[in-house]
Image (cartoon, rainbow, N blue to C red; front, side, top):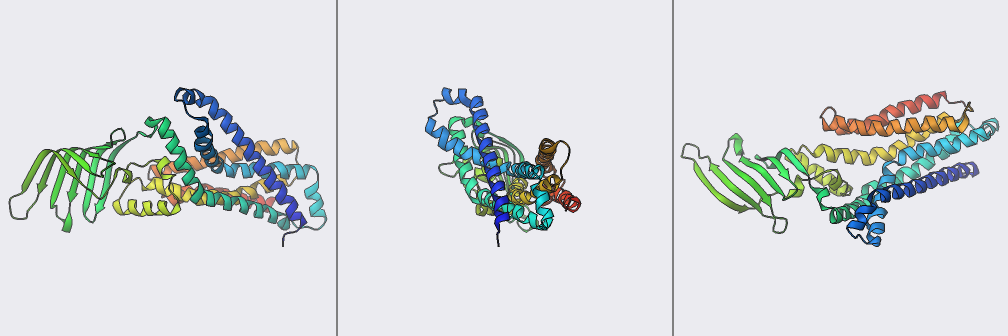
Length: 360
């Protein structure tokens, strides 16, 4: 049962947290507008689209990404003030156990975690789609990327390889497809380029060469300047980056991961990072709440300023560690689930140690 003490701490937690997010949102908009105002004016972007298609979708994504750090700073800020005002000492002196004081903190962190989880899985993907559509509409070259040395498994024993893919014209260069049914090569298709028509779904092969291998018989060879054909793949199956993956809700993301694994797609690591981030981010709210509480329940010289300085440094180190750990996945040093959860595991140990040592 939630009592008056719980409501007192929960109210302080929530008010401080959402006020800090509001302050951050204002700062984000101010700095982003100052950077992009010339582009908006030059491209004559309507004010309505800037406000509702861009900032209404960009700001929530940014806030969710950095919500763990602001949970941490929130706990440090209002808990330090309570400690300096001797409120924590009064609670402990009146017979309230330290573990009992922790409960409203955990409840508050749970609210933030649930909001972050639901937003990351279902709400923000739709917002990201609107934001990216806006960015591509007024800055179309932003979406242009080049992929290199891509290998894919289309079906059982059917493999595709191309040296590079250009987003300028949806074209794969030095395209090769091999049919290896039964452990033996049945046919091989090579083309100088393969361009995908997004309207018809047809691949246009240029300067192609097809060789059919007949066991014990003469091989059949065909070639030509252009061939229109259909493959069980589209440019979206392999032309994906972090922005396109962030537009997928949880069901779509899971389906993409299954498809990428079945095709041996190396870019599955990027999808796995996104999937595990959506779960690890909410969990970090609990870990950082315990760390912040444990750091601030004892009066110390320097007071709130010292706590905020230490908390900011620790919070930024956590964010940097999260970003750095993803490099282990990109370089195939660690599996995605290990690398993404590694910061939480390390800081969970820190949280346990600090909680045990906290004055009770």
